[in-house]
Structure formats: C-alpha cells, structure tokens
Length: 380
Image (cartoon, rainbow, N blue to C red; front, side):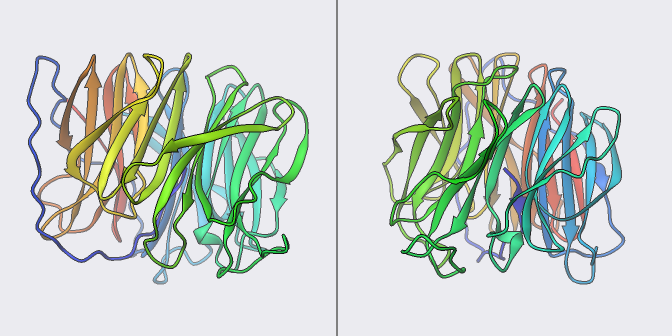
C-alpha cells in the first residue's frame, strides 16, 4: 500500500510512553542512507516496497510537486540495510502499490497521461513491461487512488477503490467509494466490483502466503469519507479461486479505524492499522485474532507498515511531536514489544514512515523527509 502526500498537522504536545526494555529490545537506528535526494523541494510523494525471500526490498517511488519532478516520473528502488540503488523507469504517475514474486516486481499505479489505473512489472532482468489498464475510473485526482496488489507465480491480484454513484455508475470525488478487483491469479478476471455498501469502502490492503495463492486476505476500512473524520470500522475477507470473497467484521472498537496494512507468514495473518490516534497490531497466530494498542501516538493520516522476519514482528508509523513529526518502529520478539524512533531527533522536516523492511530480525525503516529526500535507516 503506497504512502502518499500528507497535509500539515497542527502541532500538539503529546506524551510518549516509554516501553520497558527486556533482553531482546529493539536497537538504536543508525544514520540515514539516502535513496533519492532530488535537487528540488517536493510537496507530494508516493512510495511502496515489497521484499523478496532474501529480505531485499524492491519498490517504486515518485517525489513530486512544487515544480519538482513535473513529469511525475516513477523510479525503481532496490536495497536493504545501508545498500540501495535507484533507476529511472518509463512510467509516469502515482504509485499505488507494489508486489514481488520470483518473476519480478509489480507496480500498481495511476498513469498520469490518462488517469488510468495500470498494472505493470519490472522483470528480474531489468526489463520494464507495458502492462495493462485495469480501470479508467480513478477520479479527477489520481494521486488520491487507494489500492493494493499481491503476486505469485507470475500472476497478480489487485484491489482498489472507486467513487460510485447510488445507481452504480462511476461517480466523482463527492460520491462514496466501493472496492473493485482485477486478477490473473486463479484465472483472468477484468475489473469487477466487490462491495456495494452505502458506506464508504476504502484503504484496502491485500496479503497472501508467500509462494502460494489462496486464500487471498483483504482488509479494508468501512465508513468515514474523504470529507472529514467520520466513524469507520475494519472488515476482513478471504478470496478464493473464483474471485469471490467471504467477509466479516474485523475491528469495531473505538471510533476511527483507518489505514490497515497486512502480511501473511505461513498460516498467520498480521495486521496493523490506526485507531483513534494510536497504532494497533493484531495477528491470529494463536487462533482468534488478538491485538495490541501502542501507547506512542500516531498521526491520523499516516498509514502504518507491518512486516515479519525471523520471528520478529516489525510495525512502523508516524508520530506527532510538539514541533513536527517523526517515524517510529516497534518490534515484538516472543510476546514482548519494544520501540524506538527511527528518524533522527535533529530532523527539522516532517519525517513520514513509508515502509518497514526487516531482514534477519533487524528492521530498516524507509522514510520520507518531506520536501527533502527519501532515505533508509537501520537498527543496530
């Protein structure tokens, strides 16, 4: 799920609750390693990464706005820890989501030329494919598109939201949103509507067990809107080879449940999301889902990220501070959570968490220093 441009937030003095430090506490994050440092100040971004089986992250990013990157060129990035590379791609537009399998790195994006949602791919030999159009109903501002994609065996399954009128016709930015899908996993299925709720269905995240296909796990937010903080819950669904979904309520506590991110390891589904200004993590490793709410606060419009490596669960999010905002990472080893700030305390710009990419239980945080650069920092 891509992390996109965020509006300025009013500063608030918030108390950060310190976490106890057991034997396997999270390490201190090292100096920033630049991934992309454009020669201009951007005011928008879209970034997403997916990891391969060796822990290397592959993804796409675009830093744009304020006369910066006016063609809205999308770049490919790859790396782990302190070693990163970046290269230009033929794609222009807004990154929506990224997936990886042994055949390459998939990009779900809005093509700026026609504001069409496309799926394409960078093959393992570095070849960029033309891809295909999935939808032409992404709305007048493609940078606000929401969706996710998974891949397995050279095939994909994408889910995204579209504005829909009460009649079922394509809507505009004032109409509610429903979820749509297209896939080649399990067989070709072109654009198909998934949800028909009168409430807004948004912020979908999709996950699948690595190297397998079914079930496909989908979590999304139902409620809210693009016009104010309206109450919202989370729903979860599993998809089968026919492209059908079985759904149920997932998170109903609190008032505002937004921005889920999910991953699957083996038979366990891990989910993180934002609830009422806090990050939450849950998994069903012990049977029913159990959750943990973090004390360190989260900004309202900054999607969190979750990943698992060598038994360590890593969750990252963006924290409001009295003067700015910083990126924070929490790790669970066994049943114990510890946390640390990933962005430096000396940073003068907004520090927005994009992804956590752990390798061998050591987490790297990929962070946007708003208006300045995209960088990575790794715990020691």
